[in-house]
Image (tube, rainbow, N blue to C red; front, side, top):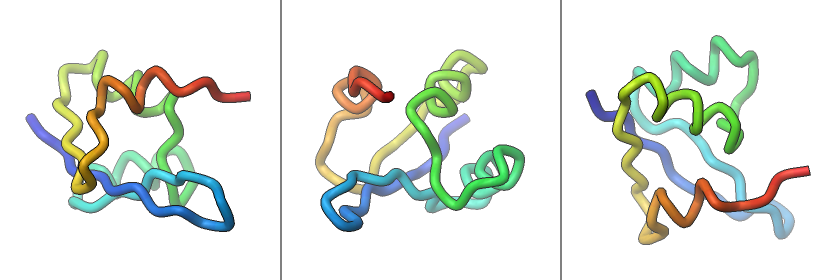
Length: 67
């Protein structure tokens, strides 16, 4: 199953927003408007294929270091 997300630059921060209904459901479960890298790692480990609307590769995105 595939979900779609997009990246938006907000005040210099790259934020990941849900685009499709399933991705929005995941953000609702997380009680956030955006999806964190940790959430995306969990989603991919559940067997979902995360597709980005932007040109950034999802494998590169998952390598981002979060604090």
